[in-house]
Length: 119
Length: 234
Image 1 (spheres, each protein chain N blue to C red):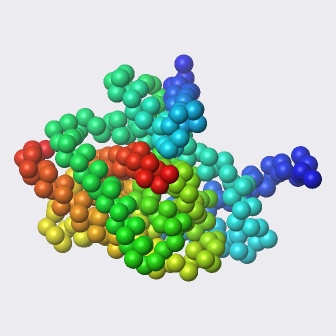
Image 2 (cartoon, rainbow over the protein chains, first blue to last red):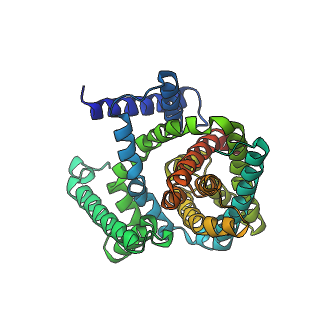
Image 3 (cartoon, helix red, strand yellow):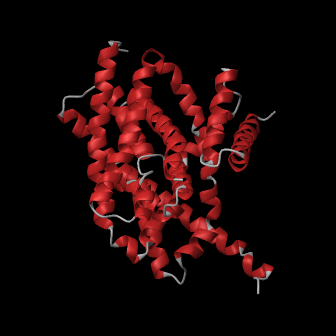
């Protein structure tokens, strides 16, 4: 089989199953995320990566920014009701991110030291 | 009266809209490389600015544009599934410190949401704005589907993710250096956890190890946030 087609079949099968799982049972988890979990489970059980899957995945991930552009354009066309809340939006994105970064870095440093396992 | 088939089906305009989006993406990528990959000139900043300007100048609406390029947004679905592959590749690297990584993801991912929501609440944000900001630290396709599930505004969620990614990618390296952290595993993981794909791209510019840890941080945080966050809001 052509490896790229093989990779695409697996990717879309996982996506379809993930969406199915969401609509039938796990309503609170986005279908694509369930697809990602199914794929992760499949790879862990199988241990080796099927032919072509890596190349297909890399292609999708490399152009992630491109697929996101239409959604990103939306920030320039928000309702004035939302735009009026820009100070809250700014606080939640910039200073909150800096605070989280300090916390994450210090926590991971402490945990890695505690474990005492330099790579 | 419902639209006739020749009204609803306009492949010419869809192709033109996708073509123009592609050309703008190409130019934004060139500008990003020219700026020596400065996160302020990330294609997700310059591309949307150019397209928004185009929509404002031409006789089209944002929703008209969005409908015609809907297939691009739809491709975020398979792209989300694809994130499992780099995540699976990174997992063996952390076997010796899996507990530290998972605990940091759980606490750090929760803190990213909690601190953002606390900040927004103090500034008097509406609930719908808060719901849109909750997913700001995670990778774009997952953030978009979560915000839809928990009743946020997709347009705002997308913007918050990008502002967070750019700000986080710019602040993390100097911030962590200023408190004496030089371990590229920690710098990378922090970039991936707090600034998703934009932070991960920045981490790969530091070194391969930082990039690998950033991919790990981005993948695990996206996954855990997607599993937990909707439960808190629905």
